[in-house]
Length: 109
Image (cartoon, rainbow, N blue to C red; front, side, top):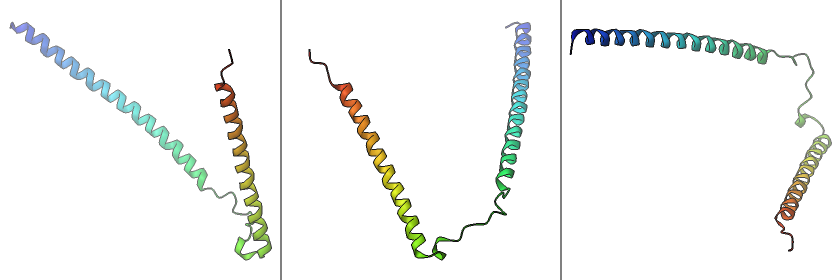
């Protein structure tokens, strides 16, 4: 091979090496900026989560310190809500299956 081909190949190799380094550095700097912005957002949100806004609000007494009737009423109300949700779910399922049955019925030809 003539000497000038080696010179062209070496120049091409050096150019690719420099371009690759510039590319990697630019992307690393961009990634660092994005990571920094993300870190700032996370730290701001974490700081907001640590602020105790309910520090002055009175807390209700624990259920086991209240009269038994209050606890049983609270349990009955919660259980009634569970029953209502289950019934609503059954009704939704029934409506869905009814729609599917109507969809799958073929017209009599």
